[in-house]
Image 1 (tube, rainbow, N blue to C red):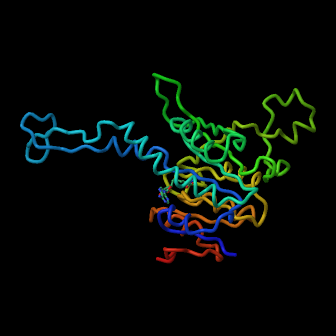
Image 2: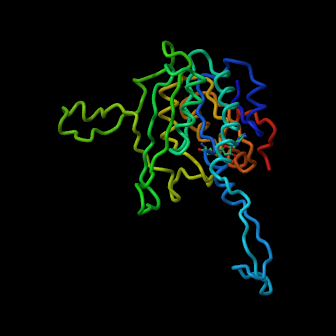
Image 3: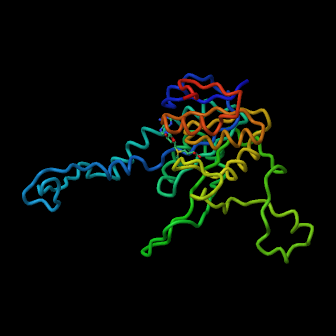
Length: 282
Ligand SMILES: C[S@@+](CC[C@H](N)C(=O)[O-])C[C@H]1O[C@@H](n2cnc3c(N)ncnc32)[C@H](O)[C@@H]1O
């Protein structure tokens, strides 16, 4: 079966697929786009008393159109994400897993929605992906992590390949024997991993690209070779790259033409991809 890349809104695409057809889902949705949108909803109005000077010396004032920014965002985000999470649950095979990548401001709401959908006993971990990069505010602790919620459909039967997980150096290798130190330790639920830096070889130009190492760890642990692995907020297709490296089949969806163009460049060398709603050749 070929890999698939769909162009379009993920909700109708998810609804068109049969139940139980996916072994692993990783998603990294746009977690604060509503908030940013609200912030940019302003209007510039000509006003002789205005505080901004524009074309030919005219003065303007800026009006904010969205005043209830946080509340508007919250309502929008819930109605956006919940139907998509319901579809993710429906599509997962009985032994399947979901990894939901989100930021610290939204994770608590999402956890409640996911608990209601999967059941609290199906929540296995909150993974903290920690990095240390970029500017640091001086008026609070710099927020330098994302959260990844890990759910399984059946806590008695799910894929978890502990022997295949990449290992990490011990923090105090002197405290363990040389054999153990050489083998490294099993990662915990806190993953230190650098972001894809602007000068990194991995960088593909897509603004929210996630590190391949983080996705490889998820794919190795929670799927088997040949499994169907899906990301319906695919962006630059990092999950697809991971599946290619690890011998899994991928299904990716994105509704942004720039994401599809990035994936077309990234996967130009891969013959067995079915492109749906998009032509990868210019
Ligand atoms: C945070 S980015 C994903 C980045 C990706 N993990 C990577 O490594 O490149 C989220 C993506 O979701 C896509 N998206 C947002 N709403 C969508 C929708 N309704 N249907 C499909 N894709 C959507 C955006 O276009 C964006 O590319």
